Length: 275
Ligand code: ATP
Ligand code: BTN
Image (cartoon, rainbow, N blue to C red; front, side):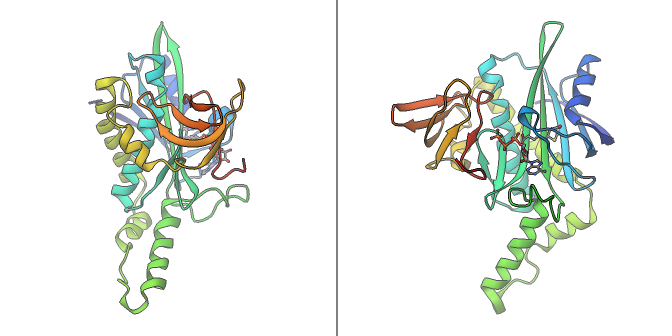
């Protein structure tokens, strides 16, 4: 079990950058940064991550894992399982994972994960950054077709329920979650996320691979059975995704047989983006 130390900030450029600074000051493993707002949040390959004040969870965890490079690349997958479970426990929503680092629901992205690695005094440090859209009612024009939030989804479920069930509808459906979202800050869901991460990380470090988690991961994986295309600079792979193996690699069935791609190497297209 990791012992967590929570550090709260009102506004930061990026919680991953704060984590980097704290690592340079030798902060302990388990240091968690969370901020009400990020002014320069980022995704993979320097892409912009929108995190508006009070609406989103922006958080990063510092780890000093003594694992192989292959195992370290699985931490993103462990985090994805954790966010999915936390959202289910908090709001009852059934999210899916888009390999390797997005959590989706209704075909839209509700969470992104950015895992970065730095070396200090020869020791490897991992910064696990998680961004979750919690209270957002709307998104910027560029994101409105691809992003969603816990709020949008619980309200949508409630409306759908009342449309389908009409007179038999439970009028109070999802009201408890809606009330929590209206009245409270985002810390309850934040704690759910990091508690779930501790549960999964314990299972993961026992084997140093996804052996104990791959079945559950594959059950939530939205890519399974869908055509995916990698952005790999070393050569594009296009085929049908079959799921992950115990090393966390995505197995793709292609015209040349099965091929595997490792997290950290590639992006896969085929959900919100055209192939
Ligand atoms: P990949 O498959 O490589 O992960 P991606 O399109 O998911 O590709 P990322 O770098 O993972 O790209 O995520 C950053 C992208 O997420 C941005 O380019 C933007 O399209 C989208 N994005 C930015 N902010 C948000 C947000 N708050 N909610 C949902 N999506 C967002
Ligand atoms: C992605 O989808 O590419 C990943 C987005 C990751 C966003 C989180 S928010 C907390 C941490 N700080 C950042 O600047 N990025 C990550």
